[in-house]
Image (cartoon, rainbow, N blue to C red; front, side, top):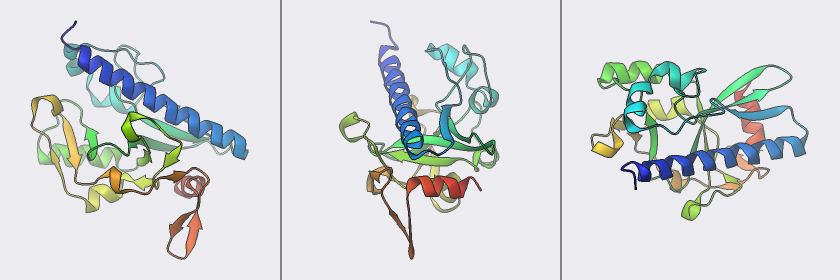
Length: 202
């Protein structure tokens, strides 16, 4: 067994779960007759060795188009195919211990971290229910990343297996997960997840 088989398995599981979220979202949009589709930022990614991960973990390979051999991360975007608008999406799950962000290599100081967060603060988070590691067709509220950056304490992990990971004191397990078309309370109004996405894309 290769030394990094454990990481390979975790990465492939994450990629599979991410693909399920995209597939389920697009199915709902087709059924609702709305011109929204979710896409992977990097449709194809190589399973990298640890040295390759370190070498390629750069901002351009994470946030923008990159070669298959260099593409990093599982970020997505939702596109309005009529208005040509995009909403950048981070997919996270109910059984994650906290909300986390993987940082590009070399970003360590508080100033560097704040600079990187300013670069991605326009992203939104789509939390999906995943009890016992099984992805379900239920979702938490669409969450602006900038709200977590502004209001939730966070810190850089220092353990060997979690380097370059920024962890927020925000538990996805405490969110309410509902079907895609379910009404969600918002003060005196109720909205569906689709309504929230459309509002965020204005």
